[in-house]
Amino acid sequence: MHVLLVEDDRMLASGIAAALSQTGYTVEVAGTAEQGLRLARAGAFNIGILDLGLPDRDGLVLLRDIRDDGMIFPILILSARDALNDRIRGLDTGADDYLVKPFALSELEARLRALLRRGEESTAWRHVGELRFDAAGKCALLRGEPLELTARELSILEGLMHRVGKTVSKQALFDAVFPYETDVGPNALEVHVSRLRHKLKAAGVTIRAVRGLGYRIDEQAADG
Ligand code: CA
Image (cartoon, rainbow, N blue to C red):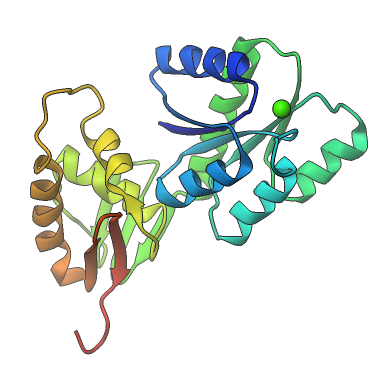
C-alpha cells in the first residue's frame, strides 16, 4: 500500500511514516503543498494523509488540486482545527475522513484501514479498452475472460489502472512490484512491463513509456 503523507511538522511526519512502514505501508512524505501535488501526480497512491496547515498553501487548496486532477484515492485530513465548519469544509472539498490533532497512531491506522476497505468496494472495477481490472479481487478480464498474469504483472497493471491516461512514475511501480527486494537491477521493471504490454495487445490497450518519467496506460488509438 502506497501512502502519500503531506505534513510539514517533521517530527510528526517521521513518527507517522515510521509507524506505517512497520505495518507494511510504503510512505512518501512531502513537507509542502507543492511537493505534495508533485508526488501525487507522479505516483500511484492508495491513500493520502493531508495536514491542513502547510507552509506554502492551505491543505484544502492542495486537496482541491488533487481532486481536480482526477485523482480519486481516499484522503484523510489531519488538522489541529477541530471546529465543525472546518471539518465540513474538508469533507466538502473531497476528503474522505478527518482526524483532529493530537491523535493516537493506532486510531490513524484504524481509520486508514477503514478507508482502504471502503475504497476497494467503491472503485473495485476499472476499465480501459476491453480490459477490466478488479482492484479488490486482483484480477484482470479481457472481454470477460480472465487474463493470465504473473503477480508482478498484476502489480504493474494495478499501479497503472489507478491512473488511466496519466503517467505513473517508475519509482512508484518499482516499489509496488519489488517491495521487499533491494538487489533488483534497473531493467527488471522494464522486462515485466514489456511482457505485460505484449499480453494486453489484444485488449486494445497500450502501455507507453514516458521518457524519464514513467509509464502510462491508455486505450490504443484507432489508427495505431
Ligand atoms: Ca502543519
